[in-house]
Length: 450
Image 1: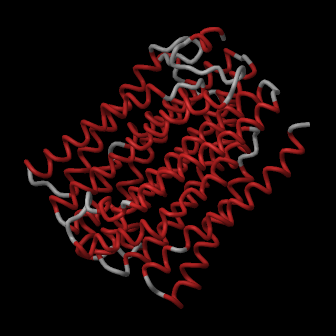
Image 2 (image 1 turned 135 degrees about the vertical axis):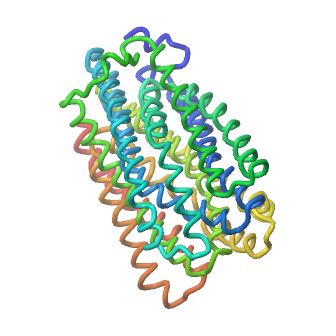
Image 3 (image 1 turned 120 degrees about the vertical axis):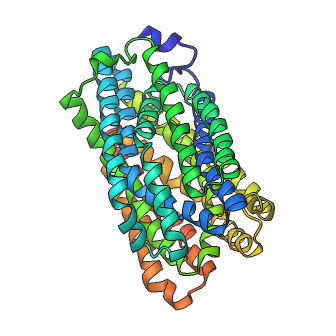
């Protein structure tokens, strides 16, 4: 295991002070995730400024749909991260090698499955969501092209999870810096030069995803043993696959639950027309930026806790959670405040239409102001997954972020049917879910840290 400690891109999570290492892990990961979100943000901005409100709405309405179809499999990559990190803590090199190749094989299977699924469900799913007629066909085209790149999306996410398990969050960032620049350039070329609409920005995103996935796989094939990927050894280990599924499926279901509730909310937003859809799509980009900062400390918590739990260093597990929570609140809160204070200027990056801008600014004020509350359950739930309790945070999230939101949308919202009142569902459910998750953590901690 010496190579894992000496490699300049990796972090020794089992020894020494934690705060600096958590920040060294989380900040590049946050930057990587934000760059990944910039793929979609560039799509929304270019579509809105150069192709019109309908094209912008077509791109934006697909965000929860993509989340619904993709999040289960991205959750499996979290399972891969936890399993490999746990093996590292236990110093089991042979199991690490098997886990790496199992995870990459799972990525390929997931990617091609999603490629086919996206082509089949695009029209019925977008129709059920009540997508307006002036947007529907553009949205279907965008979604079908976007899903052609799913094998690349899965390879990048699962490959990055392997690198994260040893503390390497820098090289995935480098991959996205390169592919992000390519995405923006291709967006402008396809829309401005070739006069394409939503289909042009989708093609640009697929090409960019291919670049980022290719770079990650090159890094893994050149990595030190035991996490080096060798294509000729690509196969699934049944026992390791079961462990990945045990952790990853509940994590993925949590993402799916988020997407289901967001689709219901998006359906209600669609009822306000294409201007509200476009404004909401623009504002969601800023929510995604802050969520990815939260998620970076989520990933830090699950990886640091997993390694130290494997090594039976329970005090370090506790400290890792506390430091991840505090850092997450501070970093996410600072970003929330910046976006809220500059909301009028921010929304103009995505649209020139004053009506669309009004809806977008309203969403930033109502939702973004409280986005830091999500740190409470995201990071705490990650720590629970790190010690093997993946189903518990999923159940809590299903109740807090799905059932309560459905009650709001279908029972409470009709009594005060305004755009602003609809959006209040987010801070209320974030707060309640956080209280439940922290309570569950203290109950479980008494059991597993004996």
